[in-house]
Length: 425
Image (cartoon, rainbow, N blue to C red; front, top):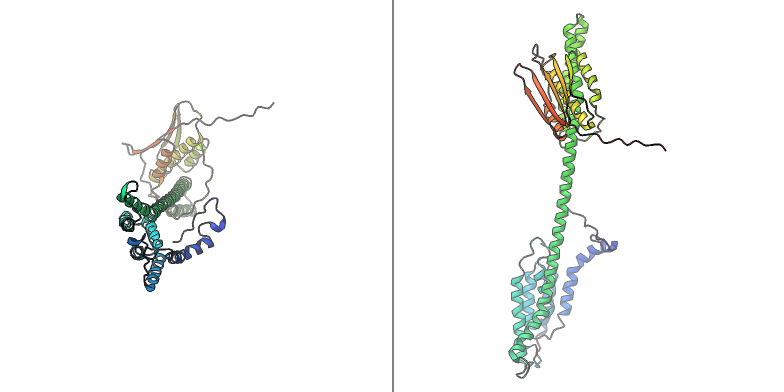
């Protein structure tokens, strides 16, 4: 997959990576490099390096010169794809005719590595260890043999030969080799930075996907808390009406309502499953009820035939809206479970107002008779546990010894934010 190159600050648009000029230059660079090596190969004594400082004139065959120049140029033009032809030909034309252009380019690419495979640049030091003696030793021999050095010079002939060989190694091999190493290191740093940027982008994408999944789960919990509770009460109320009424038509309508409600519960379960799927789309959330609406919730349960009473322990204190919403959902989930699994069992909702926490308990007695089994999404207590855990609390749900059930939650009672009052002048 093709990735767009990142823009470099400070460069004009026509020099940015990916621009037309940069793409043209990238394509023409191999041909320009090969032509440059071919032309600069003429700036040579056209003699072997062992006779580099001699006064004798050597006339190598013209076909040999032309073949060496063309071979050096072509191998330099193909260096993006293969390095070893340039290395071999560069050493050959240097040892044959002392052509330095191809050797200079070969030393650079020995340090810079494979252009076409930056992830595997190859080993560089073996090539340097081969180039250095093949350049320094013939030049030093020529300096001694062709009377460039003399006995009376400072340090002697051997020292002068060593210095001359090292000078040529430094100019012809070491400088381009070190520059190539710098280019290789820079490429590796850029590749690491690009990989790090891509990794951070992937992590950011994963965090966004995780946030969306959490939002979908939260919406699924809200749908379960709001819709499942109402539908369960509707089914319970319709069942009670069907049993208690003497009118056949009313009983038939109540049975229809109860059946429709059970089907709605089943469809709700499927919708919640789709909402928790990775490809689900988020929706808007509505404002959630607080403890001020708890009595209305209990009244709706009583109207549906569920005997429920409320007990407040301790002095009521002001708690945060988040804690109130969580406590409301605990009571709502507890009443929903009672309606679904215990029927019209006597139920007690207890609110214990402590100095640092709000304890909510929904406790029902054993059901007087087996309640009709309703479809369950299986997400009620799971979602409630997640909700209370996010609020910093804990939930316990366990059956009682007498056949009843207890839902117990501890919710930290964070103090509400202070309300700012404007003082008129």
